[in-house]
Amino acid sequence: MKGIRAAALALAALAWSAEACAVVSSLLAGKGVATAMDLRSVDEVKTDTEIDAALKAKFLAEGDDFKTVSALVFAGRVVLVGFVRSPEVRRRAEDIAKSEDRYQRFRNAIVVGTIDDNTAADLALDEKINLRLTATRGIASVNMRWKVLGGNVFIMGLAQSREEANLAVDTVRRVAGVTRVYPLLDVGKT
Image (cartoon, rainbow, N blue to C red; front, top):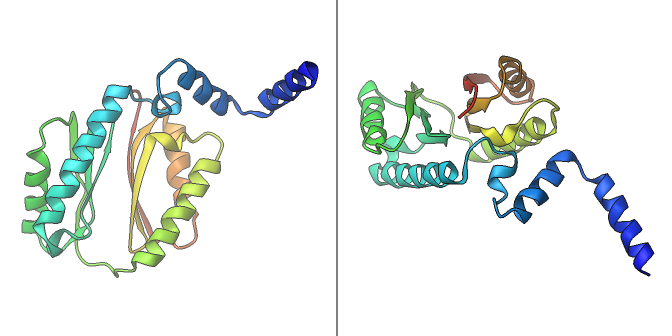
């Protein structure tokens, strides 16, 4: 019985991908899943999560002018995305975000203009993008964040090379339903 169990475990181990092994190794080492494939440290993940939650609460409190405004947060980088009705609302969103002073880099990519609000279609498109990026060899989508608004896709995060960044943007562009891609990826380490 011991031999059968050992053989089954060995076969299961062989079937695992390198990423799955990295996750298990990381868990066994007490590092947590987030850092197994993620370029960030546990502390960076925690800070990013806190910044994200704080900005979501602040934008929610602002009302309808901010209903499509989001902050994409990764590795201390904050990128504001969305569509607003006026330059004043865009500036107000930036002021709100900059009041959260724990970020390392900031970018305001909010577009002044309108979009068709189709939440169901955007959610479906977001899932297609997630599947495509996750399945594409050469893309570490765990290090990227994106937001879909009216078929427009804002993508940010860290690519380990210019080739990975280009591949990610091209992959998103090829997803049916995407009307425009706003590439906001940085290349390099955290």
